[in-house]
Length: 572
Image (tube, rainbow, N blue to C red):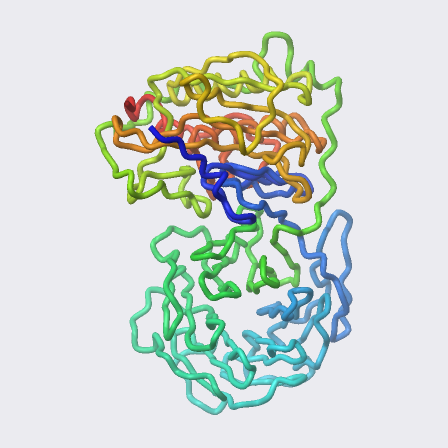
């Protein structure tokens, strides 16, 4: 068999299919698929350059007499005395600022976004529903639901639908790359073009399952996407189809979309702040599961990230460079004995569950070695997901569950209860998978990209360690990562499947994490090592936000782990 370490073939900033990242923010720790763990509130691994989620900190001047006020503990303010709700936003070209627009035409500016005027004092026939900025950021257009256009700064007027009887109201707009034209879109998918904006088609004559809520244009202006509230995507001109959420049960409706700078992907955002990524659109975090329900708009943030806005004017920014909130304090040392009395596991076991999930064996299913496994690109919509799946299949890449898996732990930078935690976590994994895990002792080795797949003809033991960020080339410095984990796979000709052979998990010793956070983080990272990916369900360990609870695998985690274990059959 040939061993392949996917993580060593990854370009900087791209997700690794064998690692995951975690981050920590305010009161949460974030993680990504298998790979890096960051100190933000998003729990996402897959060895991507992890991002920190933060409430927007690009505070600047506002217009129309409104001054944002930061409440204690709030990272980005809502606007305290809005006359009407925020309905749209646009970012400046350099991504260092943005405008918000209210339904009465009031404009609010942040960062380097300048104020060029507003419709806040004008009696409107219909409410404002969206906006777009000029290419140089020195002006903007507002559009009302009747198709009326309002121009400010260097935004020129090329026409409007204000005097046209519309079948359905206008819901959004997009400008052409040179700023010499714009498109308007109605909720029935009708397209209206002005200036040099060309017509490439519309959904106006198509029976829609749900109304159109937004649009985005391609970088060359030769096409555009429309998005419906159910996540359905409609493409025109040179706008390529990269996927949609049309077949996914959504917690809340989609409210907007934004394209990536190269036009090879797009983000969708739901009203609860949930983010759905397609093509080369990177997932940098979301507000999904945080109890909000008033997100109204999304805008790209420079070349690497995106901004969200709520109806109350509160902003959220997501990218890999967002400033890190203050880490949580470590749990008091006197609490350790209460959490970890002598002989008591740090992880509350749910008991044997691997043989009670109704899993059927897939050991007889064979796949070609010609194509590599498919890595998880975004959190699964269900209660569990897999880090890697077999080529062209939904079946996961997994370890051979009929062979004991050995592991070692480097405790040189671990808390006093660190080894007990890792042993407890592997005991929990045994109950959830049926796999036998064998502790081979402690080690002085730290995770690295050169960790061998084999030692003396047998797979290397899984390596778990606490380490400082940047101590090796595994857990990087400078990106606020708090952990990383994943496994390397090989193609087994005898099994006819790709399978994992060894893995690594690193927990950062550079941050003061509470014991609850550390337990959650260890279970999350070891879940990645065994083969679990992220889920969008916030009640599960594998949810991309690392919280102090839960501190044991939940129903969705257990269902996924059962499919990675003995119930799925032996390999080789």
